[in-house]
Image (cartoon, rainbow, N blue to C red; front, side, top):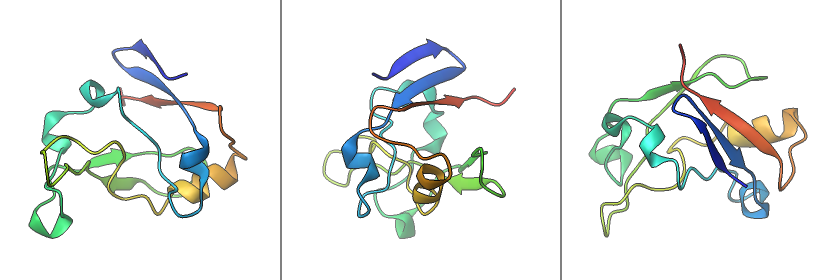
Length: 108
């Protein structure tokens, strides 16, 4: 279950697909209204990254800078953050499994 907790916080449920070693991503589908429009970049990062968001990820050192790419065919937002190298570390640090929920919050 993923859900809208408020306009400043969203709950996202992890799936088996998120946890697979080759994927290692977090689905943000259903939450695109939560992220600023200026954070959606081109399909290919070499063609242009828009304004990057700064993610502060509990349990990891330093902030993560990323945007959200768009689909090259239809222009719709992709359903995960462009930079994902940190996701596997986050899953392992917190022993996350399918069905676990985590919150994404807007900084105050």
